[in-house]
Image (cartoon, rainbow, N blue to C red):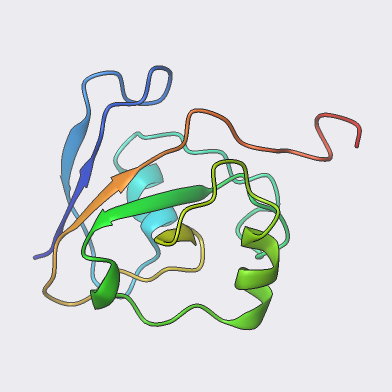
Length: 113
């Protein structure tokens, strides 16, 4: 069973976490099912950037992102070459991931943009 190592995040996961992940399920769903309340304002429909994560290890094990995700990521706070929307990135069958949840997210609806 693959694992997700979540690096410490001040609000969502202060001590970090290691979770057993379900392959074929999104990173977002895996985090939520293990009590890591990552924001997902669009209800995981690939319409915002609130579930943005940076994949620090295991990025190449993920399926490539699609154009819609790439377009949205361009608007994410703290974008890095290994950034993904966690609602769109599905856990690989065997490889572990190390993810960082950025300190900030941009929620246009909540922030009245």
